[in-house]
Structure formats: C-alpha cells, structure tokens
Image 1 (cartoon, helix red, strand yellow):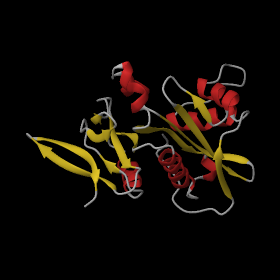
Image 2 (image 1 turned 120 degrees about the horizontal axis):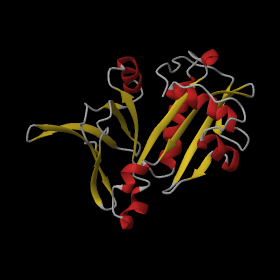
Image 3 (image 1 turned 90 degrees about the vertical axis):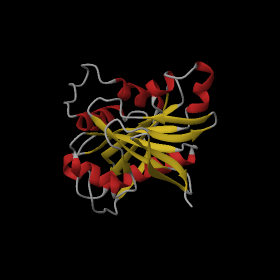
Length: 219
C-alpha cells in the first residue's frame, strides 16, 4: 500500500470495477502500492493483471473472490484498490469451515494513487468504495496491514474509522461458527481494522495481561 493517499476532493472522478483490458493499468498502480517498478510490457506482468484482463474487477480465488476497483479521471486510471478474503488465514481452518469464513474478513491488499493525482481525495474515496462493496457482499470486518512506524498512514486510517491494533494484538469477531481472531502475522506490520456491518464497533479489552480488539454490538 502506498503511504501517500490523497486527502481532499475531486468532482471529475468515477469509481467502478476494473474492466477486462485494465490489467496493465492495474499492474502499474499495484507496483506503486508495493514500492516496485512495473515490468516492461511483454516481460510478464503480475498475476493480478492477467486476472483483471480475463475477469475484470471480480476475480475468482480459491475461496471467494477478489475485487478490484479503479478510480478514473477523464478516462485515465488514477488509482486502484484491490481487496480479497485472507487466503492464508482461511487455509488455517479445517476445509469444512472455509466456505463459511470467506465473508467474515476482507483485506485491503493494494491501495494506490498515481503520483499526478494525489492530494485529491482519491485514496479515501477508493477505501470507502471498497468498504461498501465488501459490506454489501456480507463481509463483517475490513482490515489493512500497515508497516510498523508508518504513523502518518495509521492516522489516515483512524480518520476513516479504522482502529489500529498493537503489534501482534488479535482482532476477535463473531462468525457463523463462533468467535474467531486474526492478527498481523508478526511480519513487521500492524492491523488497521474496521467493522462493516451496522451497529458493530471495535473495543479494546484486556484479559490475563494481554489485550485484544473485540468486534461487538454498540450499546
């Protein structure tokens, strides 16, 4: 994820699912999100670009679907967001439970805005659109992984209703099968998490000297 999302507004922007043929633009924006350079055309683009060219903005995954939204200004792809069920987390559960867990969580895996279009509120609009898409699909909780020490980005997420978990602090939430939890994976990141369904909030609780974020109905 890029650490420089836009903060203001633009009236000429439209957000819609990626279309077949948007693969190269998606790959270029995705490269910004992970801080890498886009391979030269024909050198073998990332699998996301191939998936977008084949399926558009709704890509089939081993469990559920990935969703890619693009913000366009006068027809130009100015920003993108890609969200997906957390595959590794899902695979940590028995096969019989996986289908029921797909809608529990959605991860904001990539969020980026092209350099020329930053400072116009595009990242905030993409994040909101991603949340609405996931909420409409029945997802309970959205999260993004933020690098430890990326305080400006943490603040940005907080302003948009996300709660920042401490390092290795689990987020606990209810699923069809009962309570489940996820954490940052101890890989140098922290979770930014937000409940998606109405009336649900995240509250920090302590138990036996450890803290956790619990998604529960507001009182």
